[in-house]
Length: 566
Image (tube, rainbow, N blue to C red; front, side, top):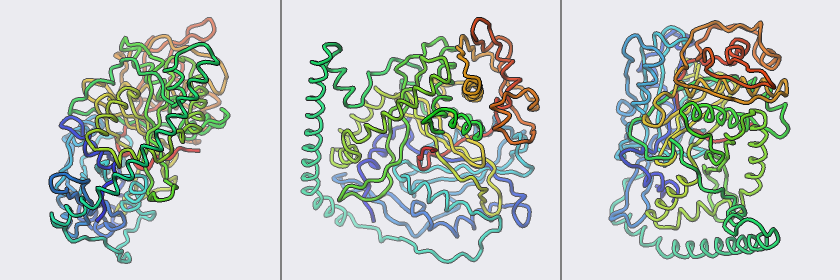
């Protein structure tokens, strides 16, 4: 039996009827690699049953303290009804990509039952017309409450669900099982009372530490204000604290509805790696942020909204506490990164994001790596929930995550994993989530939002590949390009075969030496126009020349462990 941390309880408290606090993952599998050439539901259930104890999260059930006088506890449950947690559904005919996205959006809109272990999986068949999937392919969508998932847990879940060989391991060695006797109300109440004094002492110590650091920051801000003789004390203090000015208004900072919209695409990882090597100090995560920032800019401009310079994203980070007295569990944090949508040049936008990333890493410890965690642990839940919700909505409008996955194939009950999509969450004030997961030379990206904020996610997703191509071209030729206009309403899906003969040097060198048929979103005519020196360049020229603007239809899912690509 383990008590929830303050951050875990915060995720529970943030959940409302319109704001579900779970993260998810969706994989698409090819059953032809299984020994029998097919995988049935009973094979999947048997596979999960054998590997259930690799990740304790599958058995953890939430138990609340009487009268809510203390934080809830996780209790290991010996009785897991797999047929409840793993359900079997099929897409309606014709079973295409759009129907899969709609089905996943519906599943992602539904909250988890807190009386059961906080996870749910769906095996989805009928993917008959999802282009690029082998015959007989199936999908699995699985979601976990964010209160139950941290960095270590995400890795455990991935290992529990998959093997590195296609032959199912029917005779695996038995694993230890953590099962607890259900605690009584008296026992839980006694634990809560016993924690009052130690918690008060910790809260005092945390407050003193925060006060000392804040005092130092105020002193430094006053000194900088007097020496500069310009600006304001508030600006200097926020700058020292690592906080930007409050965001301007955008379509993503309102209250979310209960209905989700989902779309998935794939980005070429070799192309992103080549871009990274051409820009000093850049990481794959920086490249991804620059691409997403460009797509955000194009979409907002097309909707008649300004590409505000203050627009920022929350980037999940993985940190492990090393201070005495703290546990060694990997904690998921959130760093603020400016998307620099005011910069039209994709290469200059990438350089600006790289500079900001270095600065953010240097100021990570301004208030102590574990101070936010300590405040969430010691402050009353209602107070911390209100403060954090207010703070996040004031300084963030979206989240952008990038998870480094394996570069070797993985298997579920013998079926090879072909695609893996991470699915994040949205909340009031943060209405857009863009999540990426690298797997076998592709970065599988999912866009999640509220229906009223992003009614056409497929158009936003198409702009991700457009901006990757523009960035690859800018890095290769070193020329400045300025985006003039992007009417998103004219984006239409077009099926075509990639033509590598006209590929730019950046694309031709980075992509594998093979051709494949795929589905892509093409912007036609004058839908996206650019100024290059004194001439106007039509986006069609870039679409035809860049095979990286191919959008393999794929879907959603998971905020696993958050690790930047290096």
